[in-house]
Structure formats: C-alpha cells, structure tokens
Length: 451
Image (cartoon, rainbow, N blue to C red; front, side, top):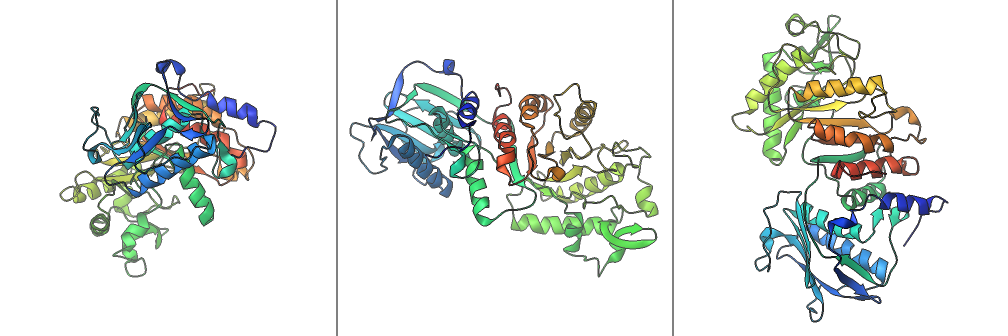
C-alpha cells in the first residue's frame, strides 16, 4: 500500500470516500471476503474469459491481497468458501440465479451469503462490476501509478448483501494527454481509466478533414480540390462544395470502415484553422450569420458537405456517424438554414468560453452562453459530446481547479442530453488529479453528491 506524501492525504481520502455509495442502499447482512488474513472466497471466471476479464481478475485478486494479505485462488478449492462469479452473462451456462438483460457497459452485482455475482453485458461491463465491488471495499485510485492508490488495510474484509444493476450516465468518458507521454505513463493512465470505470467507444474526433481527402487525392496531385484563399489553392482545408471532393471523401471513409468495421463514428472535423475555401460555390452556401467566435459562420456550408457525405455512406453504412467540431472562430454555432443529418455527431468545444467556470455556474455569463449554445446543438442532433479543456493549454502545468465545476455541471449536461466527454488533459497529475478524479466519478453518475 502506498500513500500520498503530503499532509492533506488523510483529508483527501475522506473527501473522496464521500463519493462511495450510500450505506442505506444495502441490507445490514455482511458477507466476508477475508477473515484474519485468509480468503473466504473462490473466484470463478466465465467459460471464455477475455483479455480484459483476465486483467480485471488479476487486479481484483491483487488488490484484495494488498488490503488483507489473503491469498485468493482460482483453482478448484471451493469447499467452505463462497463463490465469486466474474464474467459475461452469455458465457455462464449454469448460474443459479436469473440475470437481467445487460447492455455493453451495464453490470449486475449481487451479493448473497453463499455467492457473489459480478456479471457484465460485455467484458467492459464485467470490469465495471469488479471495480464497483472494490470501491465498496474502500479502494480508490485518485491518480495513475502506485502513488495514486488509496487502499484500506484490514485482515477482515466484508461487503453487504445487495443486488445492484447499473450503467453509466454517459457513453463516452475519456481524459487524455494533449502533449503525449511515455509508454510507461500511457500504461498507468490505461490502468487508472479502467479502475475508475472510464470508457472511450469507437467514436472518433480530431482534425482529420484534409487527411481524409488526401487518401485518394493528395494536395500535390489535386490542389483544385482544396481550399481557395486569396486566389491561391492551399491545403489548410478542402473545397467542400466540389462534388468530386465529396465523392473521394466518401470513398476514403468507406475503405476505412471496411478495414475497421467496429467504428461507430468517423471524424471529419475540420483542420485546426479558420482558413476555409473562398470560392464562389462555397461562399454561396454561407448564411451570413456572425459566429460566436467573432467571424462569419461557415457552419451552413460545412453541414451541406456533411449531409452529402452521410448520404453517400448511407447505403452501405446506415448507422455510422460522422463527427464535426463546434469550434474556433467561425464554426462554433450550428447552421442557420441547413438541416442537420441525424447521423451528424458534434464535439462541442469550450475553446471560446470561460475556462475557469462550468456550465452550471449561473454567475458566469460566458458559460451560460455555452449552455445556450449546447441547447441549440442538442435541438439539431442527439449525438452531442463535450470537448473540455482541463486545464487550458496555457496553464503551464500549474494548478487550475475545475473539480468543483465538474461536480456541479455533469447533472446539467445529463439533463441536456449530452452523450459524453473528451477531456483534453495533461500528464501533470500533482496539479490536476482533483479535476480528473472528480470528473471521472461524475461522468459515471451525474446525480451523486461530489463533496
């Protein structure tokens, strides 16, 4: 067991423990997992454990051993021990209880005097069940690595009899590093995400417009398909009104989806600039609306382009989304005159809004305007995600407290129909772990008390 080496660790542990589940949710009957440092249970994996299930099982066993000193077995030593079932519903053929239907991230956790069931709708759901059990035992991982472990120490471990069926409030829950990290830091981050029940589905975003066209039409070969600026073709963006450019983008995405069929959303987010095409055909599609970012909006022309791409994909890939950024100085607002195709996904960035407050802060005019913008976008499409800067890129690795804002705003996001969050973070956990830890817990359950 390792602890933080600064005076506030004890206070922090109790603060974070307040996020644990309310004790009134369970009966008072207790089931022991360990007594006097001896394991009281036998772990049973499903018939075909995935790589994730194996990792989770090893972490479950290892964590209980760290806490209690008990050596847990997966061998056939069931006599006198309760059985703990870990795996997917479909992979168990002889469970003695009925399990409800489970979606991918849903789990069913049932504790009885004779058995514990950690059952998921997928390996991901199973993982969530296991870490929920560890949370109930008092385990917390507030930052990656051993330094972030907050584990209790007791030779006796017990858990209350209960039955629990749960799934997360948001489907996309990710915190990533804007400036990269080492291989070792990436592995520690992956462990932290798993232990805190985070998940990034195959929904892409990122500045990918010119990369997509370049698959079949590199700028050097077809400059006429790229943006016209001051009378010169540049590779900053593409000419979205050009039918051939649209067709080649559809072709590139189709080829990608054949190679990666599990992709739920392909990124057509514009490149990271405001240098859109100035040709007559493109500008004719603009609405004349002045964007919140301060420049004439190009959202209508871009939505026309997205609609055409999605129509081109619809025959072979009717369920795939195409994502776009609501971002920067001229494409933050939704289109004025152009309908939004239902398979349009929007990552709404906070780039032009206050970086010190959250959407739930009524005293902040900027974030209240962001709430209005979000309502405008959710009226256009149900596939809206938040791209949050936590912290702002110019923070220099210094503390930037946003955890309180995250605690208050997640419920608002849930009410407005947001699907999830992509936090552009930094590998500077000493400064930002309260933001990331509280944010992660609220992404799972936006209704809980974050204090």
